[in-house]
Length: 137
Image 1 (cartoon, one colour):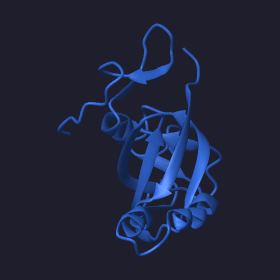
Image 2 (image 1 turned 90 degrees about the horizontal axis):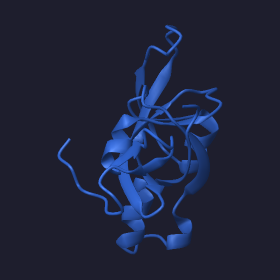
Image 3 (image 1 turned 90 degrees about the vertical axis):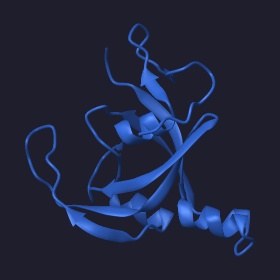
Image 4 (image 1 turned 135 degrees about the vertical axis):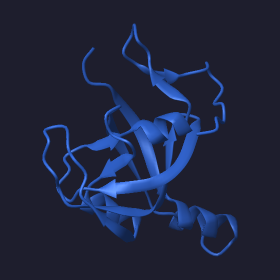
């Protein structure tokens, strides 16, 4: 099938709450636009240290996940990040791997946005058509 990419926007979830409550301006919400690899072998979203800093996410807990090649690497769980693809969005903690080359969009945000990789076209599409369904996880 090949590698599937998704153009997504990541936003600091706390900043978005603060903007909604009038504590900061919309222009102060820290965000980045990235081209992510859709990785159904990853559980959450994986970002690198530079991206974590741009988003202003705090490191909460150190982890040592197993990568696809069997290696363990140090990583951190962060504050929640809001993830947007087209007209869909969800929120989840990010995993930071300091030297990660690509952002990985894993199964938790894919499920949260009701997305699948279409089996025939290999494209990212809505699992239930054009409308995002809120599914119990």
